[in-house]
Amino acid sequence: MRGEKMTNEQKCNIGVIGLGVMGSSLAKNMINHGFCTALYSVSDQERKRFESGKNNYRIFGSIKEFISSLERPRKVFLMITAGKPVDMVIASLLPLLDRGDIIMDGGNSYYKDTAVRCSECAKLGILYMGIGISGGEKGALYGPSIMAGGSPQAWECVRAILEAIAARHQGKACCGYIAEGGAGHYVKMVHNGIEYAVLELIAETYQYMRFVKKMGAGEIRSVFEQWNEGPLNSYLIEISATVLGKKEEDGGCLIDKILDVAEQKGTGKWTVAESVERGVYIPSIYEAQMARIFSTKKEERTYGAANLKYSSNEAPGLRTEEMEKALLLSMILAYSQGFELISKAAEEENWNIDLAGLAAVWKDGCIIRSALLGRIEQAEELSGKPLILSAAFSDIGTLEGSLRKMAAAAVLSGMPLPCIQASLQYYDYYRSDQMPVNFIQALRDYFGAHTYMRCDREGHFHTEWE
Ligand code: 6PG
Image (cartoon, rainbow, N blue to C red):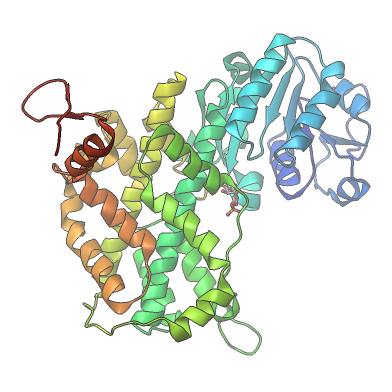
């Protein structure tokens, strides 16, 4: 025990298991908000390393002592690696918990695992929650965005704590109950999918400025700084400017020394797999995922750069304001895709998700926080349509020309900007009142008698084509 003022008899309001970067930051956030917090970690090192200027906490290396230090109903927050470790910790907790106690998983768990854990725990009278937490280390410490899912009864018990530690936007906690089962982790997964797309869109815009327009890192930094004052205002644009300003000891820009190979932990891949499973078109998120996968082919890319033919073409040059418009529209389209996927999942899983409420939860604390979310919150209140078709975004036509120009510039200059192009593709699909799948229908009927539908009559038809 480290907190001098807490006695062994005094019960803690909440317990945190796992004192890695995210766990210890979240625990400090709880402690700083005055909650008596019990901390548990198997790692001696993690326990020793934990430092807080406050004394309203106790640290345990024994799970039994940790559990018995908690007031009832016990509230245990897991901040551990997703996957097997979560099941192992749950198994070690269950014999020590009583009916009505609460387990919360704050990691990036797969939503189907969370749904199973919810129902398995419910059978034993334990209330389970899967909680999406976004904001990285700083967010966890000073106020993350919190997407709670699972037992509604547990939510009522833990709501005050979660709202207290969450980020605030104009005084309102960026924390909300999403729906039952794995819904909290589902929306966090899609949040990450949108995060992948926005990161890729920013990176592609940087790529265009750096290697097509041949601008230096310092110049690009100024552009991002300027953009952050306008409709693109967001956390990711803000940190893009900071990244571009980072110098090494020799005065060179750090960004120029970072290898162009991206890593990932899996939430983007899950989002893409979900979109295929549920039949939702999310090309920007898909291309962002694929860009990370393709980036690992460094050797082949270097060979291809020297050997694959490129026919030089005159590409349109874009002004800064046009690039800003192109990036803004492609970001709107990426959010639109994410919200579409969540709507579809909500429909299929019977989750009653308040999409405007979700946009409000994302307005601060999370990685994809941006001025756009204020507009999305309004749009979702106004209609149940995809964002791209909602009245609140009826002005996107003024941005379309710039996105098209940037996509054309990418094609003609031989610079792959797949996420920019895919975003335009999504826009153009929504403009397509005639798709060529009538032809596919005819061919399918020809070779397999699969039948087709007609524009002028109800029903399914077959033709003897020869
Ligand atoms: C957040 C982040 C966080 C993490 C991503 C990184 O919302 O705080 O999304 O969850 O940074 O999981 O994911 P990749 O390693 O896959 O890029």
